Image (tube, rainbow, N blue to C red; front, side, top):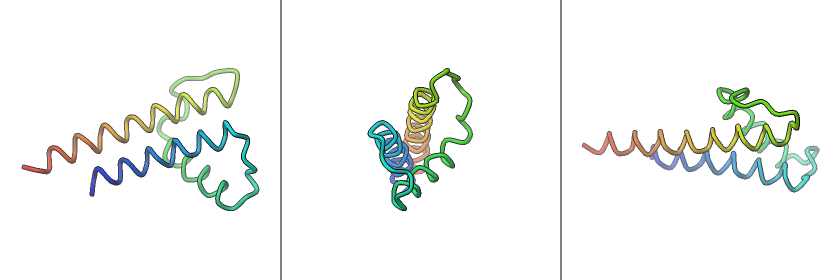
Length: 82
């Protein structure tokens, strides 16, 4: 269950990056909800790296957030098995 939560967080962040990269319409409810959830998940990693291009900054920081969520979930999942 813990690992599933980590996968879900990483998936939402990756989907948000993909939607941003593809230029999806943020007025669409599904896109809006995905981007808002991704922003919330990436809040602790908001300014880890700053770039002049806001999209590049989003890609880097959200990718780091996704990796951290997955690694932490993987570690917690492994530790709770015993």
